Image (cartoon, rainbow, N blue to C red):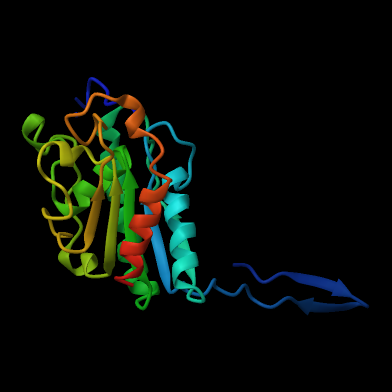
Length: 218
């Protein structure tokens, strides 16, 4: 999240073909096998739709570390724009996806993560107000249910706004003890630092660090 806005500072058809005068039905589509691990990641503000640079770095590093186990990914669906209040849409989407995975792929272990505004999305799932007492729970989505939260093996967040307000997910909220909350020196989003450039580049060694943490829990 490169900037917090003024409002933020707040869900088959069988195919047939005729061949030699005979109707031949193609086999029904086969569901994609459940991965051993799935990275559910919320990108940062302004990043293109997808899991973002940091999410991709974590996914790639984790896949390399736990091979030959399979690693899938899910991009949390939310605007990731400069209206911070829309981050709640991401929390709602992530909750729905994790709950669906618990039913369809009960053996898949979830690694939940987010960068910047995406980290704020994860804060909400943990039951932690992203901006502390500044705005309290305004604009926040309800936390994920304890039943669904059990399927989350590890949490990795980067440049997390809640950390600036003394609420790192590593020690606060329902993911405490299974979360790593990474903040670069000088990053003004997650600390009292004043170097905006420090909020960039989390896809470096810190992504590797986060992947190692997650690998130890899946």
